[in-house]
Image (cartoon, rainbow, N blue to C red; front, side, top):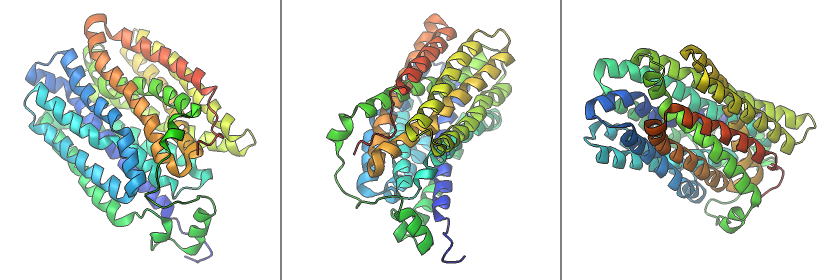
Length: 417
């Protein structure tokens, strides 16, 4: 390739990041698809399963900020390789658990590892991706996560039916080890350190992305006192609540409330996640296009997110009250598409307002988002046991409306630092 024509190492970095996002969701969705088999073996109630599923979510929430700090302090190359190896180990070890307590502990340790994935990955992209590529890059990475989640239920159902639920955890856990080695060998914290980057690409990145030394202090006081930070984080809390239901409880809902067999459950549980994959790609891409057309960055981010949450709020209720099981799944697909339209926008904003501290900014946002998921996963087990499935879906719809309102106040052009 001519030295005057930029190389595309940054796009290989993006592809590796997409693969990491896929693996995070594949590993965390294994258990939701295995819930019927685990309940059958151990006799766990819905409330107990809620505590088991929720233990991952609480750890994932609590360790978001430490995870983001690892990436900002030590660099994404070492930090991301290390945490992927950690969570892959505990994903596989889930297969050896023998009681509710042991499973809660193992899933908590698994969540500790996965907690740093998105903040550190966002930090890794902040050094490489151009501002004009941020919305798309965040959309495509989260599309990878949803694609991984979408592929998993049917695979897990097949493995469980033939080899038992324990084999599924070992099989999926091994993927992360391969990725961690590949990342450590290929990725570099600075584009200037990568031998594959030619002068043209380096100039393109350097002129667009200001750099600082790894190890600089993170301005936590400024970040945590910023109004935009908390508006964004609150909206992501609402999103996280709804997403957790689709990831952790939807297969069980289809099996117990809608009467799908284990095999059909695996297929139909994947469909909303495939729809969400399209929403992820579309949301970030449309937002970037709108920003270039003169609408402005702030309005471009707002419009896509507000429309997405409104679609989600309406379609969730449609799925909840549809009499026909297939119609309910179709509405769920529309709901997930709408919710995922907002994701590329939500994760582009930390890059917009956080700059080189985007790992820490996204960690705060993702902490609140996953607290929403932790509350949802834990609470839903009790809600379903005592009040039925409709109660948790109505809560999802209300929170989507609240998130749409919050986004009317978020300005992606107001830098935190």
